[in-house]
Amino acid sequence: WAIVKDKVIAAKMVKFIEVSSIGVSREAQLRAAKVLGVIADDCRNPDVKGENFFEYGRRLMSERWGKLREVGMKSNGVFSLPNYPRDYCKFTGEYTDSNPAFAWLKSKEGLNCENLLRDESKIITRGGPSFGVDSTYTRVSMLSRDVEFELLLERLAAVKGTVNGS
Image 1 (cartoon, rainbow, N blue to C red):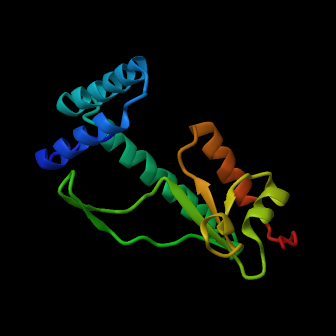
Image 2 (cartoon, rainbow, N blue to C red; image 1 turned 180 degrees about the horizontal axis):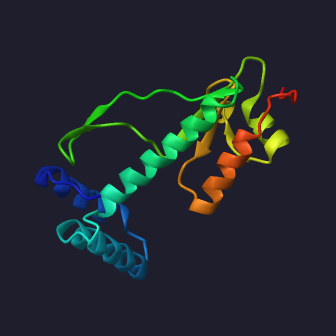
């Protein structure tokens, strides 16, 4: 599901939904439509904070990436994060920082990042080989609940890189 400004793209999306939703229960479709309606209303009538659903999501992800980068800088080179370039957002019409839903952590050479995080800090991730890259990379979700994300940061901060992660 998505909300777009371009009517041609929206029409193509409607056709796709018609074809791909065959077999999806009516109740599930109605629930999804209700959620999208609430989001659309929120965009038209922002709450007292002046922040709609998308602004909230962008702010939250920006804050999380800032915290994760802070932990990464303090890790003494145990792991690093990629730098994403600013890019043009067609929805807002602005250049913005990229703050994706998943972070690619890279461990220092010779360490299997997935094993390192699992064995040393009990952090479960999806390792690079699952995505066609080497084992020094692993993917971490940035979409967890606040409590879980804070726990992730605590555990990442404690990683020393002393476990043989082969």
